[in-house]
Amino acid sequence: MTSLLCAKIVEVPNVRDLVTQLGLFAVTVTVGILMYQLIFIQLFYFLIVRKNPFKFYLGVLPASVTAFAVQSS
Image (tube, rainbow, N blue to C red; front, side, top):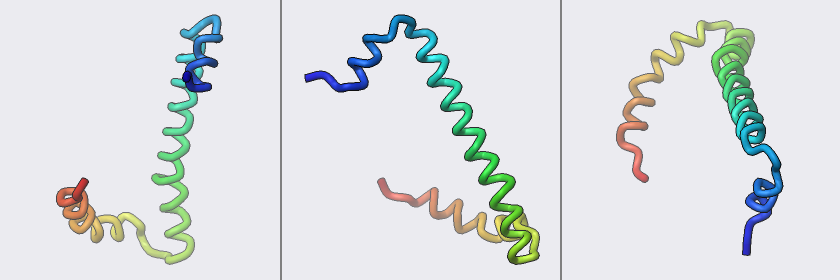
């Protein structure tokens, strides 16, 4: 039993174009998420709370580092 994705990849005549398109898609998604996290969230925080969002993140940083350091898998 083969997966539908594998069957479609085998049908593609030029795998290089497929990998290029998937890479561009991954870059586009990554840039969009970074823009959302680094620009829009900060802007919304500033517009709603009227405080510097970076001071908030500096205050939360020790707890975040601790949480990532002791996370269980």
